[in-house]
Each structure stands twice: as structure tokens, then as C-alpha cells.
Length: 359
Image (cartoon, rainbow, N blue to C red):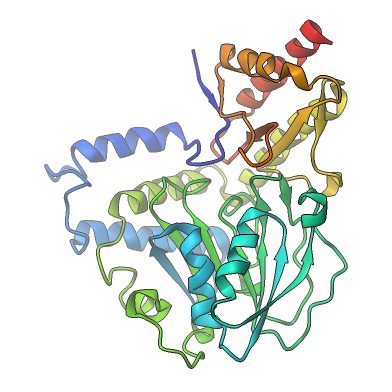
């Protein structure tokens, strides 16, 4: 019986990608060698890197004056690398605090310059996206986390500003169109819509680099990786290869517009059931801020004691990964690009069955 994987990450990837990756582990491109053992400087892997780069530029319409990098350390390393490379000690950056990851990014950036929290939804447990906040024009950059996996909120429109933007797009990149030119830097951990854990995508405007006065360690200087095409040291070969396969799959299946349409249909289905079913309650206070990627919900008031019973029904229906983040509890349905709508329908049926049994 099929497993319906609602995990927030590492997350579901397309079946054809798993099949091709598994074959490459045994024999990559008929070389008689595994993708796990070939040189990262071999022509065969260089071709993988080049194709991944071309696919990203094509899918996201990345302008020519931006570099595309594959780094390690996850988005958590980007919390400090962005500030280290873009924020001088005597300069100021603005951050929009919309959840745990942006809070951590703020903490790391404070080591490199002045950080101002321009807006925060923390007083209301990050249940909405702040709006109407002012962005000073003297900032080095303004940082946003476009989608918040833990709290189920998402920026539906970008802040209007003439200040350079930095975007953590770990959980919604490649799920919808994005105007890359609005950003000086975009970063994303691969393990949601792009590939397995281990690779981190960075898209950076080259002119934004080299302006801070501090010494930057070689490995933490974006210019090092721009100059060496992400191969200054051994890159995460297998995660990059699987990411390339996933990007191929996205393009072959209609590109970003098709992903956006598919994701909207899945989100509409799950949120309609959350709103209809008296056993559940959505956690995002403004429906306009609901994430397309991560639907968060809890049991209705007075039904909290039935938490285990709902999880048992999910397990029986092979719906995996529905438990909410440990910091907030409740439930979470993560619906990344590779998830088919049939899996969301399976979860909706579980919610309806729960209503019939306990309502």
C-alpha cells in the first residue's frame, strides 16, 4: 500500500528521480562506477553541475549577473554567511521575524553588524505574516523567510522596497515563480523541493559581493565559490546529482507554472477540509497568509484528548509525517512539488473518517 509522505523535510521527491538516482549509485552513465565514487572534477560530474546550473537559470529566469552556487552546511550556515559577506560592522540590516528560522538568522547576523527587527509576529506565536511595516532606506539589506514550515505561513507578495533583499526560500523555492532580480541573494536548503539533504543552493548578485571591509575566511567567502564554480573543495556530489534530476523532472512536467498550479490545488483541498471539518482548526489567523507548502492545524477546542486517535488513523491510512513540529504540536501536512493530489485526498479522507468516528 502506498505511503503518503507529508514530512516537512527531508521530504518527498519524484519517483522517477529515486529510480534514476538508485541506478546511478550502481552504475553512473555506464561508466562502471557509482556516482558516489567518481571525481568531482571529472568531465562527467562537471556536466552534472553545468546542467543543474542551466536548469536553475531556465526555471527561475535567473539574470546573467547572478552566480549559482551549491554549498554545504544547510540554510543554517547561510544565516551567518549572508551577514558575513553583506553586512559591515558599522552598517545595519533589517529582518522580518516570522518564525524559528528567521529568529535564528537574526541571532547569527547580530555578530556582524547592527540588526533591526522591522516587524515580528512572535507575540502571536508567528500565526501571521506582518504587513504595513516600514523599511528604512539606509539598510544594507532586508531579510525575509518566504515560507515558514513550522507555523504554516508564507509571504504571498514580496515587501516593496528599494533596499536589497535576502531571501531564505528553503521550503518554497521552485514551487512558484519568483522575481530573482528583486533579491541580492537567495538561499535554500535542498531537502524540500530540490533534492536530498546535503546541498544548499545560493543565487547571488555578483556585484553585491566584496563590499564589506572585514576579513572573510576563504571557505565562507561567496567569491571563493563563484570563482571555482562551486568546486573549491569537494562539493556534495550525490545531493547535487539528485537535485539536477529533480530540476529535470520539474522542467519536463511543465516547469514552475505547472508546479504552482498543482500546489494550489493541493492546498485548496486541505484547507477546505480544515475549515469545513468541526474536529479541526487551522493555526494561521489570516487565511491570506496560509502556506501552500505546509498546512498546519490542531484539533478543535474540547477535542484535544483525541490527538493519539487521529494519529492512529493517519498511520492506518499510510499517511506519514503528519505530526506537527515538536515546538508547536498539532499537525502539519507538507505538500511539496512531488506530492500528488491523491495523497492529500487520502489525508482528507482520514480527517472525514475521524469526524464520523468521534464527532
